[in-house]
Amino acid sequence: MSLFWRIFLLNAAVLVAAGALLLLGPITVSAPVVLTEALILAGGMALMLGANALLLRLGLAPLQRVTKAMTTIDLLSPRPRPEVAGEGEVAALIETFNSMLDRLEAERATSSARALWAQEAERRRVARELHDEVGQTMTAVLLELKRVTGHAPAPLRDELAQVQEITRGGLDEIRRIARRLRPGVLEELGLVSALTALSTETPTPNGLAIRRRLEKDLPELGEEAELVVYRIAQECVTNTVRHAGATVLELSLRRSAAGVELRVQDDGRGIGDVPENAGLRGMRERALLIGATLTIGTGATGGTDVRLDVPVRNGSA
Image (cartoon, rainbow, N blue to C red; front, side):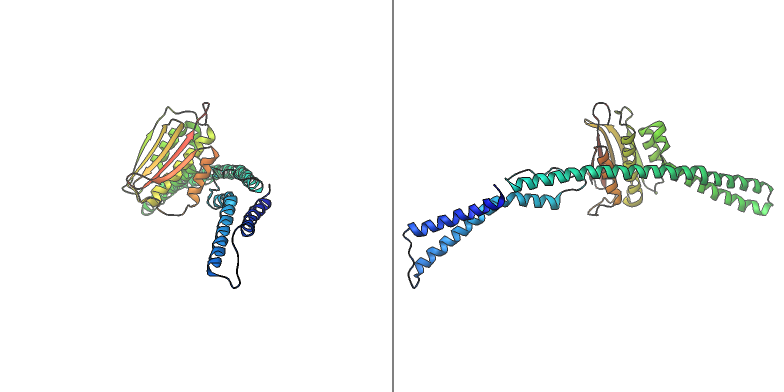
C-alpha cells in the first residue's frame, strides 16, 4: 500500500471513529453550548489529534532515520547503511538511497585510486628529473668549482671553497627531495628498510627523538599496500616534525591478528579540534584503497596516536 493511502486510511479511521461516537454515544450539543459539552468536545478533539499524530509519527519514522543518515553519514566510508524499514514507497526510498551510496562508494574508490596513482606517477617523474637533470647539472657545477679552486689565487680559494660547500649542500637537498618523492629503497629493499630510512633521513628539530620498532617477519602485503603504508607513515612523521612540537616519536610496524599494524605516536600538541585537512583526508583515502582501517586519536599521555590496520587474507593484503 502506498504512503498516501496508508495516511489517508489512518485519518479516515480516526474520523469515522469520532463520528460514530458522536452518533451512537450519549453526547448531545445544546444551544447555547453548555460548559460540560464544550469540555467533552474539546477532549475528544484532543484525543483524535493525538491519535492522528501518533499514527503519522509511526508511519513516517523510517523517513526520519533516512534524513538523519543523509546528514551524518561519512562520505568517505558510508557505512553502516540505513536499515530498510517500513513499507511501500518508504522501503523503496531507503533501498534506492542505499543503492546510491553503493554507486557513490564505488565511483569514489575508482576516482581516488586513479588520482592517487597518477600522483605517484607524477612524483616518480619529478624525482627522476631532479636526479637525472638537476642533480647532474649541479654535480657538473661542483666539479667545475673544484677545478677552478685549484687554479684560483689564494685570496679567492676560501670563497670558492665556501661556494663549493653551498653547492654540495644544495645537491644533497635535491637528492633528499628526490628520495622523498620516489622511495627507491621501498622498491629495492622492502617496507621495513624504507621505514628505517625514513626515520633516519628525515631532518628533525632539536629535542625530537625518533624510536622505531619494526618487525621483519611480516605477511606479504604487495606493492600497492606497501606504498600506502609508507606514504601514511611519511605523512605522520612529517606532521610531527613540522607541527607537533614533540620530544618523542615512536614508529612501529608489527604483525597483528588481522594482518599488519602500523602505529605512529608522539607526545606533542595533538590534533585537538582541528578540522580535517588535506593531509589527513589523503591518508584516509589511501587507507580505503587497500581496505585498511585508519584510526587517528589522542595517545594515553597526550599527543597524537595514528594506527593503520592492514588486513591480510589468503597470504596477501
